[in-house]
Image (tube, each protein chain N blue to C red):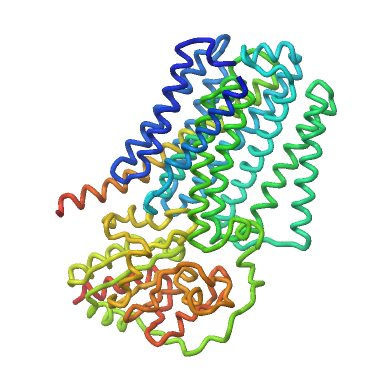
Length: 478
Length: 99
């Protein structure tokens, strides 16, 4: 199906690619992002129309699939709560991987039924003479698509807390994964060498798919919830790679361009997330970080000073400058709306209010930004650690809401800590730091947080939403 | 033909790296879910499998399931991104009326 069959089809694929590029570019800026998304959607429509114009298409099953898929996609997109956004995005991504995997299988089966000579004709004028290339592209698409699919489903289950968000580790896990990769490669070679018309070759593809699905599961289960921003963006990159690989089977430049754009941008985002944690991608993927096996660092000095809502109210009431630091705990408690309400009351009270968001706070890149935007927090009050850290000494009160590792001063003070070197929000340098927390449990990384024992830290125990609501009513009753 | 495809591939990868160089963290989620929707481009392959008469029933079945999956990715991805971005815009408008 080389698209040069028809000038209009070629033109539409080019238009689609250009619209994707413009759309992605516009997604880089807050003012243009929404239009950018729309433009990239129009690009997708152009690519779909172009494909429907190919010779010999019938539309019965396409229409059925399109209606069912669109309905499921639309309903879930509107029904999903903002707090459940990470798992939803992960799941959508998984379906892209599934589609690529199925495309690879369908093409291989078509080749089996029609024979290479006929299949070669179907691929179009510029098709490679040797079946080897097509076979390699097919198996590669199947592998990456399958890993994306099952990996995303596991990420979805973890993020939605259907299964534990903690790393699931077992003895010899690395060997199992290595063995899986080895088996997949061997079976893939068998498939490429034998080709689809040999039953061994055809069966090999099915085995490759099954093994790759297993690999997706076993490579995501050892990764803990707080490392999910990295995993989600990496899986996003994979789904692009799978689509680009499918483009090499079908010799379709539209697929190749769009797929590689996504693959590359996903990789960039993955890198940003890793940098924000001062860890390498390999460390995130293979270390089982946060399984609680890490060394507990040096004994922490000082004592915890719990306070009540009323004390917290007096501290906040006197503050002229307040910085909120939200974390995953705010998402769990769904406290974003009351937090915004408290922020507004503090502003009325004459304080300068900012929300400082760590790049890896929450479970996906930009998770906290989305939640606070949903709660109508003005855009310019959302700041990054680099904006607040230099002036932290002038902040009267830093309010930590359900964040832990991203404010852990051990990252700065204790070279033996697993968090050592991670760029944090330095709330311990604020004049007073109020930490809202359910209990004294250690954070995700299983690392003791010396912040709780600092002389200027006050602990406010309880559910974040209930606590902040109580603070709000204190302010209102004055 | 193959050489040309690889050429296009390499250029697109570089373009992808260049496009997403410095994104404010506010936009990380929309960018991710927006590009996620683009990866639904694999719908093109799904349509070919489901709509062309070659290869028999299994190809049509696999193709149709692929169309469903890709459509979930495309429609869900674009709509959810738009929903998130509409919230961002809402707050900006409010800022405008303040200032």
